[in-house]
Length: 374
Image (cartoon, rainbow, N blue to C red):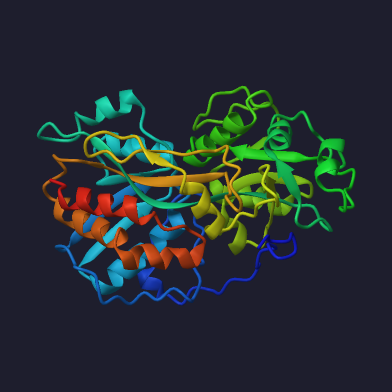
């Protein structure tokens, strides 16, 4: 059965967190987007606690809300452990990991060959950094255009908007995709990340893969489009969209839902435009394949899928850790925490806050890699 545009209109209201303040995730920088739904239960009957201690990690803002849930659950059930995850962005998180200051990094994009080589100086005993896919979900395109809901855009139009070639909301290219909408003359203000970001890397991978003529730039953590304005972190982009009529930007679906921001439906060439939902993101991720070698589980995604209900702007967010040669003072706690977030319970809890669980055939391999960490 095909979804109508009215059917796919998203729900705007989420519950508020019921966590005890002492258990809340310590967040630094501009991406303190706390406010996880009260429906998330912090109790657990399955956690195998690791040793007492403190675990430091940083990186991806895309997985910040998932980390908040995981940290709250782990600390509620393992009170002798403290996990501090700083949502500083993928680029900053990778650099901190490569400097040896964190136990693992969260990243929405793959390490470069040079970064993998650099990791050999941090990972002891001949180890190297590997990618463990741990959380996935859609990158939503949020916009502020009062009176216009269920806005439909395609890859080429998005590329031209974010490259400052389409500058008004009543442009013929947008009107053609939205024949029933009353589009205003309002100027379009595209906002991009000012910091190095895996979300930017994945969004530009989509633009370049699906509309290479309109977006000739190679995918990158750093924004390469022309014009527009910028803000730091996903929460910074959310604030700019909320404050500026005519604005458009990209951020994880959880940020859009928690802040009541309208999101774009994508015309992929399928029978119906595709909404940014967890279920549709899972369909998009299903076409991905593992391209890593050895213990590495790096994935390659298909940004040009035209499968029904497959949302194409998706990211897989990784935990970057040494396959062996981790810090002996924290490796057992690292293993215990990662074991929980890769567990069936850990994966299911984050589906309640707009993340897609990693497919079974992949997450079982992740669990094997965690068990072998040394």
